[in-house]
Length: 123
Image (cartoon, rainbow, N blue to C red; front, side, top):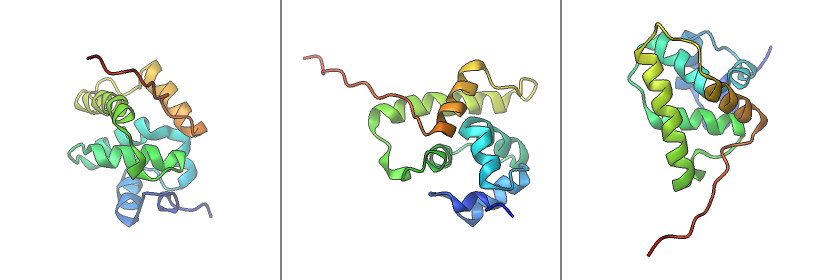
């Protein structure tokens, strides 16, 4: 039997319960869906209020990174993704992720997050 999602870093028994309600029973299922789609399914299945920390914990679990390693630039990028998933969840008549969300999910599965670009601060 395949391990549950909580076999991944950052996730525990409460996450397993939420994922199970969304039909996501294994770590492989979660990885295959990607963070955006998995989180959208959890929102739809549980009716829970969107929570950014859980979204980024899922994304980092898929990348096998500690959830505490989120830097400010990556946090801003991830917040845009979270807002898009949350907006889509509020409009259930449009359940399919857009092309960018599918790309993000594929990058998560590969362990390649959004590139962080350092720009010098303007004075």
